[in-house]
Length: 471
Image 1 (spheres, helix red, strand yellow):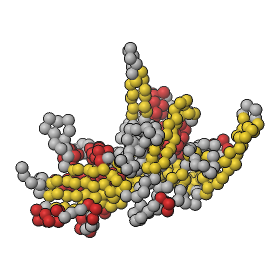
Image 2 (cartoon, rainbow, N blue to C red):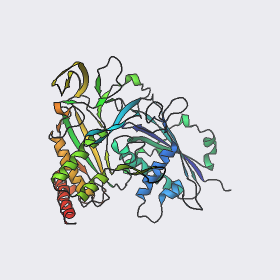
Image 3 (spheres, one colour):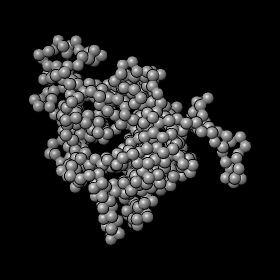
Image 4 (cartoon, rainbow, N blue to C red):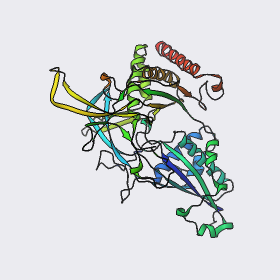
């Protein structure tokens, strides 16, 4: 057996940009528990990381004759398969974990479905290290592996590689803080023998961090960024409030309150910040888009294409003596990132009375308190996959729904009937279609303003309605 030409170690420092929900398949504490080791420390399995990295590299390889993903991660579904040349270890977090519980409920037309409430654990904030090892047997393979690593590192920073559950609803967004490597061969065997991961010393000549930004990748997503100002209060209720707290508290998070690279960061040093979960934004915009499309005369087929774009999970009972559930699902082609409110957002305590609608009177003993977020600013980020025939008119439809949000006609969260969850625009919608296959993409982006881009997608919406109407 021939010995490898080189043994290369890669060290990728990663921090969470939004909370992470990687389940262990158990439902002890909640309906969906975060995966932990025997000491209770959360982690992300290397298999999950390698699978996400490989899938992204495969997407980048579309149209090429030779798959870089197979050369890096090995061949599969073949009799003469080859194992991976790149070993990806688990992601362990080097800061004190902050695990909290969130609630979810299935909605239909903004009304909760009976018996559909559930809860799940999330890792709110943290940073850690991903360790990777590559064995180089052939000349030129080192460059291919490094190119692949830079590709999925750029995909992480672009928000296109996300981990865990609810990836399209705001969770699982990461950021690569630093990427470095160490290379060993027969010329420095002694260094390899004494090498220790825990005592990693950076070498400026092997720092790949700057190369991540220089990496050119193809993206199938158009990104919409919507600057907003909260005009009043925000009520996205967090359940399971502790003793001594108000009865209802608007959803808060600890993430991004301190520098992830700061050494010795502890939970007690952090401050809570109000957040808008992607599920809340996604549900509101999805429903408003459906209403607008109906008002514009969209056909049944057009509504079906729109709903399919958001993804679905269907449960059907198979016929037979033993009725079994058949589950069909499709991943959403729209990603809504969880948004963080600005530091100047206020926290206000509201005292309210519970009202009986039947009697039109105050319920005896129905006094309760609510802690809500007030004023402040945020930026919503929505990514729409632009590789399908219906993509462009759907982007135009989303722009109309976003306009309702900017002008206060569409609210987010609860208590909308008393003026909560109302926003106004805080700047123009930014449309980033660089690198996509749209006509207004890479070559013409500089020639068009944001308003011209909006006109382009709204024109595609009109064309889509006319096309479906003539079918």
